[in-house]
Structure formats: C-alpha cells, structure tokens
Length: 102
Image (cartoon, rainbow, N blue to C red; front, side):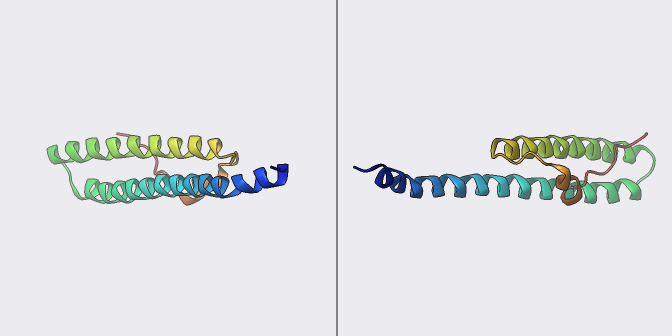
C-alpha cells in the first residue's frame, strides 16, 4: 500500500475527530449559555427581594455564578486541547456578571 493511500484512508477518521471536537465545544458553550441565562434570572429575582428572603436569592446567585465560572474555565481548557489558545473573545461572548459585594 502506498503512503498516499494510507494517508487518504485516515482522512475520514480525522474528519470524524474534528466533528467530535466541534460538537464538544458546542455542548460546553451551550451549557455555559444556559448557566448565564439562569444567572441573569437569579439576579433579577435577587433585586426584587429584600429582608430575610433575600439571603436565599443571594446564595442561589453565588452558586450559579461559581458554576458558570467553572464552566467557562472548562470551556477554555477544552479550547486549548483543540489548539485554540486565544480566549479574549470568550469574555465578549460569555460575559460573567461581577460577584456580589454584600
């Protein structure tokens, strides 16, 4: 078997690897988007409550923010594993709200 034939035989496998990498990145991005949407809703709920009820919403907001922060970090690691080293756009596409200062 000639070298070109062996290389060409691997092209479909390589294409499948690339599809799986892209699908994994998409899933991670989708999960982060969902978390950020939940975080946005939690922030609105937090602003609407005062007094003792507010503490529960503060806790929920902080938990969601921490989870979103971790998911964003996971996405960065996954991107690096795929050879994507520049993450500046992630802050534009997936902006995390600031932590609460209470």
